[in-house]
Length: 382
Image 1 (cartoon, rainbow, N blue to C red):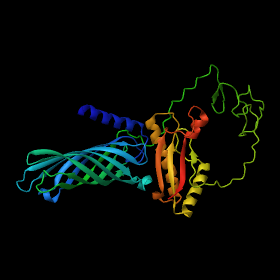
Image 2: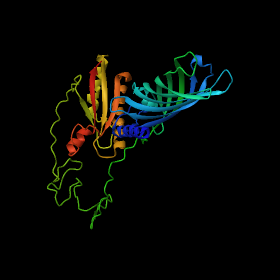
Image 3: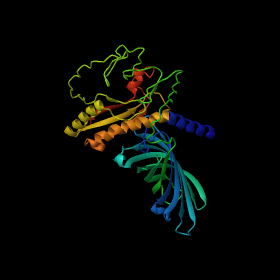
Image 4: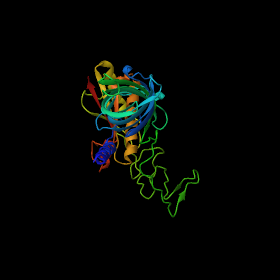
């Protein structure tokens, strides 16, 4: 029965991890489940009469479908030298914690970014003292920082934790014990990101060669049909065969008369209402109209210190879920970096990659897919 219960718990965590499109407690640009390994130094409860303990910790994390949250399972093992005889006591613990990251700080564009986090949870603690083993209920709280590395989403992970347990067996006349741990380790995303990847979701099809080609003797250009005025429309369908060089023409080769563009107006950025920035397929480059909108956001932030911006990167459903999560993060980060360059304070900007999840329009049409290739943001007051 115990084995079946444990299997059900791990299966639920795995299913939750597969469905959660969060970036919580991950280095920038990565998402999904993660693993971490760390060495530990323990400052033991003073009543134990033991030296500082040395050990290790292994952790597995699953982002939750809530902003900045994750659930984490940690296995901890430590040995301590007893002051009375120099022999060792041991402690192992299995803990389940809720972890909440506090956002990204630093300079992501310069390769240095910090992501502080806090955690709290419960678990079981097994003590091996003077050769006798006994298990107790424990409460774990702590805080730490992820320091992103420029390789494959890896991050240095530092932590400080406090483990309190209800225990009247390890030390005479003591009903509870409190031990302190300092940890230093490495966190690895289990969905490795390929930074800067912009590979198309589907490979372009090769262009079939025509059976009879017309070759321009001056340029060497080969076409399946002649184009005497070089306007890109074959002579067979060109209704205006004497177009001026460089002229903009329509589908039948006739010049297009451009209508005067309307006078530009500064877009209004209402507080609290969703706004969007659109992107081309497989791109996170911001176009000029969107820059105008973001300039207004930066000006609004400068005028009111109580305003913040929530930024969500999105994609259509072409490509894999993993690729789209990374692309969504790159789009959100592009908007964040643009606002930072315009003087916005980093602590007032938060980013999240939604990827292809929770689309704002149907992916069944090109118009809907275009709407989903976007960053959705809101200016809020806090």
